[in-house]
Length: 313
Image 1 (cartoon, one colour):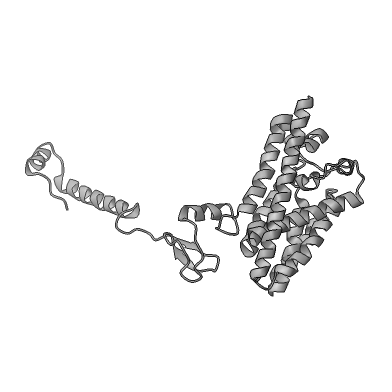
Image 2 (tube, rainbow, N blue to C red):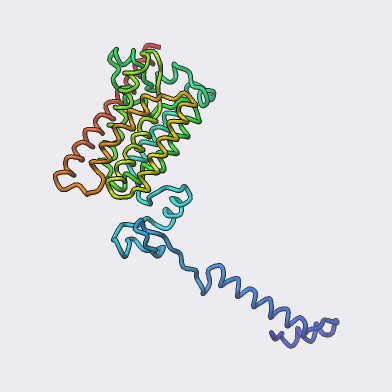
């Protein structure tokens, strides 16, 4: 029970206040306040944890895993990655840039051609931002076989592709490295584009990163099979079958999907099961640098084509 100053207690009693009852209420209030201070950052601070990819539970302030030595993100970044259900806490530069370019072009398309293109973009809008057709490819616009992956036909198209790639592309980039991932994206995209040119009418417009997405699925089938993870390999195989059935229902570009999937299979077999040696790493780095140059040339060609179009208008 808390004590009151004598003069205050005498005054309160003179006006009829039950000071004993008041003292007990003030005592309970003081105890409640102490509990609140302990709860919200007082003496008993609750420990925060984050997980490493190896499965080890680490403290929030740890900068590296105590078991495998892997570099850990800050606790704030860890919570952000958990919020968006990303597979790896590390910054995946190839994944980030690839998805950024897709979203950027989609936004620019809406700015230049109106909000209606978010759902049903016109043929003109698709071609201006890099979609592929056989006739334009034959006229020398070879860059379109790459830039078609950055353009999407409506909101559902871009959502399906970006959601799929945001789940599996960071995982593979962490497993095989950024240069190998860039090579994987480039090869599967070129194969998907060539498959479209071989089996579809030259006037048909195609766009989207579905070929890359199917390439990643094919890569996962053989990569995990070679690594001894049959459950993960079976998961990717089932994903391929479900995606093909869904593609037939929505009249998707089956040639590009199959082309991407088939090209991903040997890449997964090559990289699965063992870590590349010193020479192997150099080969994959050289392939990655070559892929980067191809993408820079393709995007630069697209920018130049748009600049020339603006000059003519």
